[in-house]
Amino acid sequence: MTGKRGQTPTVSKRQLRSRSNKVNTKTAKKDQQSPEEPDTAQNRKRKTAIIPKSNEKRPRVLAADAQWCARNASTLTLKAFALEHGYYERRRCHARYKTIIANMSEAEQPRLLQEFENWCLTLDCTAFWKERKRTYALETAASNCSEVINKMLVSDSQGLLEPPHPPQETTESQPIARTTTADLDQQEHANTQQESDNEERHWIIDGNDITSLFLKYRHQADIIPKPVPLESNIQEILALSGVLFLANEQHSECKVAVFGEQVLKNLLKCQTQTLLSKVPNDTPSFTNDDFMEMVNVVSAIDEEGMSPKSAKLRLLTLATSMDQFKSNVVEGIADLLVKLPFDPIADKNQFGEVDIQTRYYDPLLSSIVADTTRKVVLRWPNREDTITTGIRPDAIVSTLVQRAFGQSLGFGEVKLGGDNTTNDSLCLDTLKLAVLSRNSVLKYGHPILTFQVNGFQLVFYMTQMIHSSFFTMTEIGRITLPEALSCLHSFITLKNIPRHPPQHPPQQHPPQQHPPQQHPPQQHPPQQHPPKLHFQSTPQHFLPLQVLIPQNYSR
Image 1 (cartoon, helix red, strand yellow):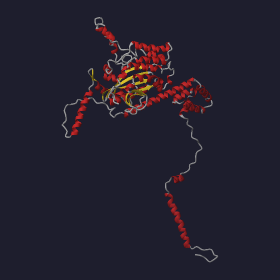
Image 2: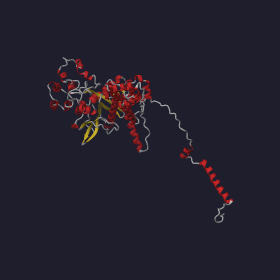
Image 3: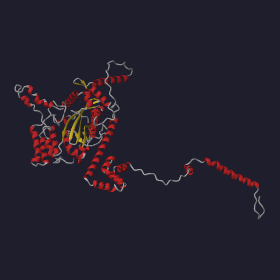
């Protein structure tokens, strides 16, 4: 209702009641919505009660290494601190040690800091951290070796680690013929494979079934508790890969328990004779004149002051009048004359693998293993082989096919030796060579030559295939290379480059003067020790290495 002009407008009671009802309705809606607010992070934060912070601080907790230093403050040294907490890096250890000393009591702090600074200036500090660095490198190498071996064994064929089963007798009964031609072909293939397996299962040497013994040996190797230590069980790991390792006086206890020592000797002798049978009977040998000429040339370097280049020219002139195999050996020695230092290097830790390969081994091995006239070369690629992936051999003996490398005829691994080499790393190299040579033999069907270098020690192996799942890796020789020209005269000896036993004297002397009973002591001793197959006892020495290269390899 509105009043007259100039008067205050009046509100009726009905309007007042309606307004109050609207206010009450809005208030009620707010009261109803408040408990049903959405559960959001903002609402929870707004509703959370604020607890006043306490002025009390939490007690300070010292680190474990700081507590140890505080307990041993009277006898504390940085060396003991590094050994206790496993520090291998010098800078980090020194920084942490100084931080702990700075927070110690004023009574101990000056003394410990002064002792620390004085010790850092001594040679003991340098030697200690050098030893810690070497220890860290060895532990890292051992860890990596174990990891690589596990991957290698797992990535190999699925049936590699399956326990072998004893051979079962086969019957000659034939099943009923199938109705289809495909079934007949399949059955014929199965029968042929069965006959082949029966032949392979029985490799008899002196009345002993070597294949059955090898299956038993693999089974004993497979039940060794896992993980298998590499260094002590390298031969058992090779057996699980189908490779029987043969080296004189280097048989494992498990292998001797299965085969017997005499059987292993006979087996090693048999494999040796098999390899030597591939060497032609007319293989040339060094004469006394050849040997003395080489010795005189090498001795002239020290006695007469002849330069290494002049000595090399004299040896190369001598090689031109020799047969191919003899000349290759002389050429290898001639190449060493211009590569070796005059005196041995004192600190062997300064060597690298490339130094060992190019300065000491490549001059000799390139002459006695490779042959460019037959398109066979020795190279040091450190790359994966085309057949076996995942393994990078240091050296490969390859064929040449036009302008590319062909198949691999041999492999090599090099280690520096000394403090830089562990037994685990050497065993890993042997395992690599076994896997590489096994796969190559399986593909190409001829023996594969491998060599392993440990410092100045050189070992040769030959891998042969008995059948598709049984291989032998036989050590055929080991030599020690000279470290310098001053040591070369000890390398060119009758032990390393002997001449063949004379064959004419027994024909010239009549049997009446020399009864047959007196001849064996003169000729048989070199043949009584073929299992060793060191270069000291093998008449052919370097020569079989080239002769054993297959003449008719497939390029």
